[in-house]
Picture 1 (cartoon, rainbow, N blue to C red):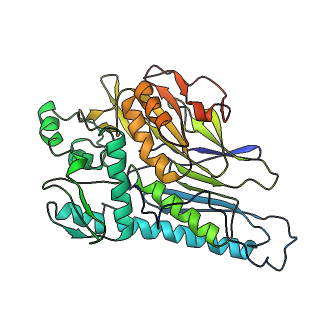
Picture 2: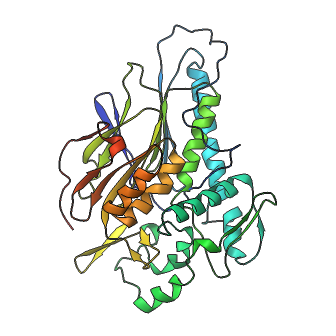
Picture 3: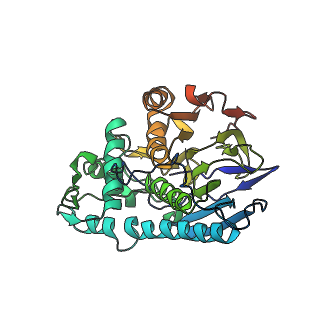
Length: 373
């Protein structure tokens, strides 16, 4: 449910693709929790310790979107070591995709296939489900991974029809009865989980954040400290660029072209995630319908056009952005301010821009967003 960010590298912008259907993720255990601000371990410097930093830029496909890693070599990780670390980070994202996808057999798809039954799952699935429950509770049910029980009523992205049709209110009301994250049960000690009979889950609103943090841990473990990891619209920036300046990402204009942004935000050991109503949508009768469904109504949320969340880790940013999008600027900003180390930039349904307290000074508004349906 994200819109891809723009990475401002030096004097040019790198534009990423939109985030299509795919998993997203939830609160990890203390042992496995992403630690994006954790410093890389010290070690014996590489032999060519005085070599200038080499920029590496690697792209791949995973989790139904573009994955990109930009990193610089350093005295503890030369070019060869840094490239190997990037490949290992991408491999970790693909491993997590195999665990969490609901487009083919996986641990989480087995939960859907055997709804109402206890199913054995591994620690990654438990972490994702656990944080999904946290996100549901903290957002008063506006974030709910059981929204997937309604998936076939709304067809966006790859499933979009040439002539889109709206589901009937009766169909929506009937399916909405299956949407309730509180019916998900976890047994961490027993390594198993269960969803309600007839329910379906999709962690597309949270798993990419989990995967980005996991990739960041791999890079730091391999002594790469200055990097960006992006999976669709989820992004984590570690350290700084070689000239000492912070990473900067552009925030897309929700009614502009794919290469237009209205603001920039600095990232130094911080994550960024954007939810937008333009990534997968259609217009019927002059009204826009999109993939961010309000589980309270069964219809696309209408309070915002885009929400960008800044946080200490991508897992949290990914968990919060959809909830804020659905809640709208007033309740959404209140939620953001209640969470530690979280900030937000919101473009509401009336095209007004709202910036939360923690990112004031870090966000630069470069132009007013385009106003259009």
